[in-house]
Structure formats: structure tokens, C-alpha cells
Length: 484
Image 1 (cartoon, rainbow, N blue to C red):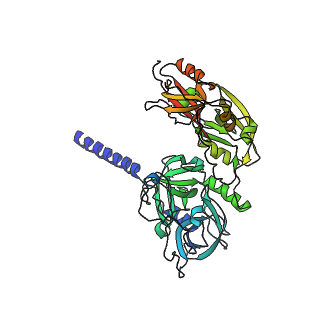
Image 2 (cartoon, rainbow, N blue to C red):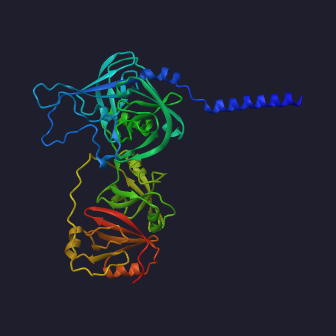
Image 3 (tube, rainbow, N blue to C red):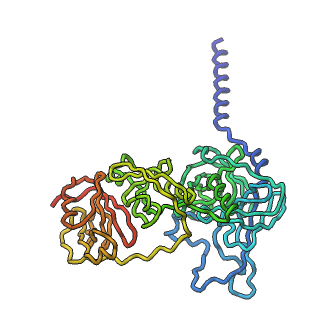
């Protein structure tokens, strides 16, 4: 009897474990999602007339990797020259790219990426039922890589949208698009991270996934398991041009806001306040007396800008904007950029150990302008002393004429940087301010500066406000040399 009971118990345990394992290994079924939403995803091809390459242009050779560019994020559609693009009289129109998009209204409005339709002379849209349409561009925004195009149709299938803010890391997501021209290809994966900031992309908090994305997926939708669009597939990280497990999508709420402005005005209006900022590191937070690394450190304030009028000062740390915390410096451009020009916003800044409230009237971000050329580096008025200070650098005072040219009331120019220097500065840099434990001191003389350094503990953490050309940044120094 006992043997029978043991056998039954063993059988029950085996069945229970098998059920648990089966449940744990169960994968989601995407078939219904694809059946219901796949018809709203379109294939986009563009045609561009052949143009002569400008004199001196560097040819783009496929397969050659520039080591300095490997860490940049590549667009899905590589800009490669096609057949018939040469200067000869028989040059033919070039079918430049294949991309994806999805229908957001029954009368033919389609969302895609700006880089898919960039410089296109003709745009062709193909639906899953094999119907072909010519499309026109309503508007495109390069900063977010969102474009709105239109085809003439009625009763077209449309997607439904979800809230990307409710996405959780680890959640299943699905992409539908035309990688390498293979129409309506379905790939799946999970959300790897949220709110990613990418190089040169300050206005989009990207959704990172491990969904297989390849050339041709650009502009296609990213779905959650409820069949709702939560993102627009835009970029991949790749050393080869193909998928390597890192894909990035524009959140749906960002894309919808952009398309609304494009539909209404044909352009996107973004806010600006006129500050240059940098990330707050742990050492910077210690120097400024902040409880933890957070916020955006203001390097400089543009004269006459909204921030200047609101009373924002260089060395302020912006820790709140319009009632929301600024955890990272990358948060601020997105927050300000999404504010309509002319609107009022509340700023919370950390200044000299205290929190202050400021109100700013947000201005409008203009088109990119070429940065002004760097001003000549100042030269010391007199020969600098040979002995370096506790930072391992030699500094000298600026003359009256130099101060007038640079519009400074003080500052010390770096004349020599020793190999064992503690501060990451260069010859010609101008030191404006020293910050230690939240105390800000403007640097006026070599004697004053060296006395300040002499009074510090060997393990002290200080921050220097450094002007290099026309740029200003903060440099943190951890630890000093022994007192001489």
C-alpha cells in the first residue's frame, strides 16, 4: 500500500512540475495581433532623380568602417550611391530606399521616419492587399525622425495607439515592417530599457528593445501585446549595418505630438531657454553640496535669452522644470523642447547650497546655426612663475585688455600643464570660478587661487569653471598634491 501511495505521489509531483514548467516556458501567441493589425502596415519605396556628385565629394564605399564613427547610431537606410548616378548623360532615376510606415487615419495619413522620405522626388506606398499609391509629404521633423505622409484613399485600415509610458522593461513587443524589402515581416522581443538618450538625439526618450530590426524596418510600428502601437522603429546600434540586438523606437506619444503639429502647421515648434548644460557627476554633486548626482549643471547662459531674463546663472543646477524633477541633464532638452513657445514654466535651481524658484517664459528653438569660430586663446600678460600649484598647473592673471576682449571681470589663464597635473585642463584655458562644498569663489589673482588650494585637505573634491574659446564647462578635481 505504501508503495502504491509513493507511486501516486510521485506521479502527482511529476504532473505538477510538468505543468509549472510548461506554464513558465509558455510564449505569447502573436497570430491574432498580426491578423488584426498587419493590414495597417505599409511598404514605402522612394525614388530620387540622379544628381551629379559635388566636386571634391568623398565617395561612400560600402563595407569600410571609420573607427571614430563606430560608436554612433546608424540610420536604417544607408546612403549608398545607386546605378545610373554618375555624371553621364544616360543617368537614370534611382530607387533609393525601402522603408515602412503605418496608417493612422482612414483617409490616408501615414506615419514613418523622416530619413525614409528625405530628399525623395517620388514616394510609393504599397498596402498588404497589393494596392499601390503615390504619397506626398505633409511634413517631416529631422530632430525626432518623424514624418507624416498622405495617400488618397478612403476606408483604409488603421492602427490603434497605446500609452508608451505604461510599458514595462521586460514586456513583450512586436515589430512589423519590410526588412530588406520583405513585406510584412513580423519580429518579436522585449523592452530592454526606456528613456534612452542617444548621441545627437536630445528630444526623444527612446524605447530600447531587442526586437530584430534591419534596413527596411524604418518607420514601422512597434506593438504591445494588446495590438496597440507604442513606438515607431527608428534606429539600431550596429558595427556592421545589420541587427546586433539593440533597436530603438520613438515613443508613440512623441510621434503623435509631432504629427499633429506637422498636420496643422507643416513644421514643429519647440521651446528653448538659452542655456548650455552638462551632466552632474558624483564629484560635481559633492563640490556643489548637492545631496546626490541629479539635475543639469548650467555652464553658460545666453545673454538676453529666456533663462537670462528669468535670472538663471552659470553654476546653477536645474533640478526641476515645470513641476517635474530633472534627474539627468538629458531630461531638460526634452522637457523644454516639448513646451510650446511663449508658455510660462517654473524652474527649480540649486544655487550656492540653496534651492530657488524661478519663472521663465519659454522661447522658440530656431533652426540649427553654425557655431561661431573659437576665439583665440589668451596669452599671459607677464611671464608665469615656474612653480606649479597643488593642481600641477601654472596660471597667470589676465591683463585689462584681455579681460575687456573676453568680457570678464577676472579669471586666470593656464600657462603650463605638468604631466602629473590633477586637473584636466589645457594650456590657454581660463579658470573663472572654484567651487568647494557649495561655496563659489571667483578667481581674481594667482595669490588668491594658490591660497585657496593651500587651505584644502589632500582628499578634497573641487570643481573649476573653465572657459575654452567661447565654450564654458565644469571640471572636477579629486585630490590634490601634498602641500609644499
